[in-house]
Amino acid sequence: MNALNGTEGVLRPTAWLIRHADLYDPEPRGLHDVLVVGERVVAVAPHLPPPRLGPDADVAVVDLRGARLVPGFVDMHVHLAGGGGEGGFLHRTPAVPPSALAAAGTTTAVGLLGTDGVTRSVQELLATVRAVNDAGLTAYMYTGAYEIPTRTITGSVRADIVLIDRVLGTGEIAVSDDRSSHPSEDDLAHLAAETRVGGLLSGKAGVLHLHMGAGRRGLEPVLDLLARRDLPPAMFVPTHLNRNERLLEQAVALAKLGGGVDLTAGLDRPAGDTAEIPAPRALRRLLEAGVALERITLSSDAGGSLPVFGPGGELAGIDVGRPRTLWQAARAAVLDEGLDLATALATVTANPARRLRLDAKGRVSAGADADLVSLDAELQVDRVWARGALVARRGRALLRGPFEGAFA
Ligand code: ZN
Image (cartoon, rainbow, N blue to C red; front, side, top):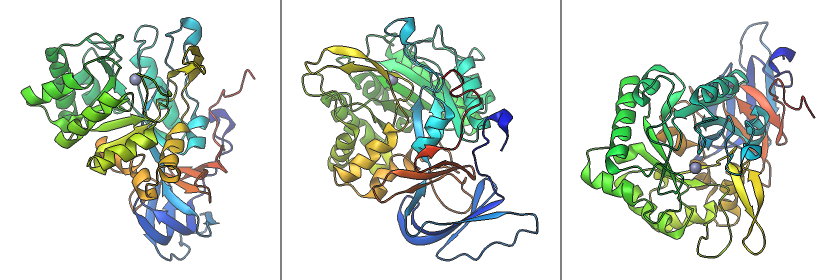
């Protein structure tokens, strides 16, 4: 559309009439038509006539012929501005390009820093988040980094959440990890309180997103805190809970209190003492243990550095997490673990949207943002619409950031 903003491949008619969709909103609804005008879904019904929008309007009609249509994915853990660096400066990972999000079906991403709060800044993250929004997707962020006192833009977590529209909470704060600040219960309680009040004052979720490491106490610091302090469990959203058996067990206890349980899509280090539980299997096991589906989310950790292990379990290199692992994990929950499509979908659409209080996301109904994904017969991502624009087709991005591939 405009060579200057790099989105020339994107299709953005006045309206879309998407016909004969096997709709999952994310509950299965059967065959429906969906009408999109501008950036919003305006009608969903078994049959919709073409809209009358005036002589200048162009209405694109797409017949999905019974293909599945689902909400765009909401990924609550993306190192949008890059991360890593734990193998030295050469291993700092690059920013996640908007095209990779679009191709993955990720229409909403929440950015965060990680281990490196020194050469990375929340200011730079905010700029990256704004760029992703300018490209036509939706992005938010958490303020902070692994450490406590954590990194902020204004000097306070509370003020960042209140004053900066894109900031939804605090994260990822490292707990039970040798790279953490080894936070005390008071440290965590104080940070949680600041986050909560920031959320209350701004009408946002005010979540505390915790990176859980392989440390021996696991989720105990969080469970102890909830037993002793007056803080709402729902604001705690620890992640990487499929890192080991102990964390997964403790996650059941946290979920029963009302806390969020976030599983990382790419974790699948093979057997041994430190065995990770692949997210699709961890999801099935949590459900079998009686955890309410609405508590469980999946996220990709895209942009983060990923150790790669050789056949003998030795470190063989460092790779970078990719956005597409999010849907690969949800899809594998259906194909390999036997879960319903609606169940798998909830963990990457309605559940993260609800946890983050993003009311226009994670659903397909009148008034929602027009973030949609059509799936092919193998449940792979085909078309992706973000805020009413077609940004990917056959799983390939139409959308490009302005300088993507400039140095290829
Ligand atoms: Zn992490």
